[in-house]
Image 1 (spheres, rainbow, N blue to C red):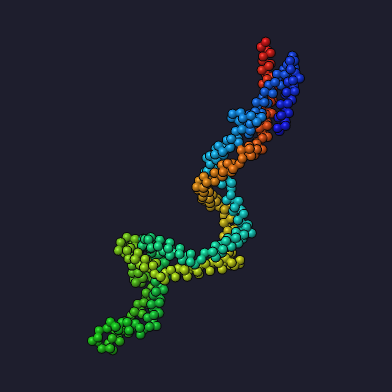
Image 2 (cartoon, rainbow, N blue to C red):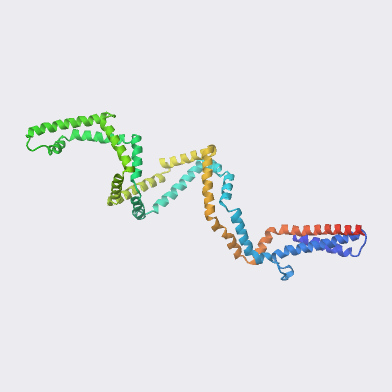
Length: 397
């Protein structure tokens, strides 16, 4: 394109030379060629001045790209940061891309879901293998437990207990206690007699105490049996009222709340609590690793099934897809708003490392074809303008 533009300039020079001082129609041709030379020369100067000094002459305000590349880089950086690399632009781009539907379509293919499960299981296993018991103990001992000690637990426990009582979840625990109490009384009459006999008066005959203890044992056994068999027994209702009062006091009564916090602190700071927590962690990690290592295990099979189901829902459930799009868009926008300013300086850092001539050559390589069209257009437009001016001047004579 540079050759074409230069050839037009040379052609205009040749035509100008051949028609110099000619009259008639050739005079119009001469004026057109003269103006075309001026337009070609002016646009050549303008295009060349962007990247280098024309003819090597240090003319002011030329070779702009080599001299101003750092300024251009910072301006480009500001432009990208202000108009492109923004959270809102990233959100709009994500929402318009249909990424959620395409991801759902991909995830619904069993082979793809299986691949996700395999890689996820491998990464999780490696992560668990790199977490030592010492690190977990240190985390629990110095971060988790102190935080739990500081956090008030009484209101939370009261709310939980209140909900448990309202949903009758505690009934199973009451059933267990009553059944165990009945079985203990039935299997341990001697121990019951020993405990009750200690409270008998010393002045009464032994045979009287024995009759009273046997009677008490019989009545206690019958009473516990009644509580076990009658779901609306007064004792059960009394337990319900007791638990409701306890739940309310845990949320409102300062004295009860204080005793609950003391109990919590005693439990959390007990040495056995840490050992129990580490034992639970060991069981959890071992069970999870074994389940993830089993390709035919229930855990991996269930995860894959749920992933396939999720893929189908992402394709057909508009409400779910909208929620995922909204949340993913918010996350992406937050990441761009938070870290976008740290990514944009890459533009200026890269361009600043370029040599001035190298930067000019790179930019000219990308836009040079269009710039040569500017020279061509300048030659043509200049020639047409010269023809028009010459025509008007001739008509004015």
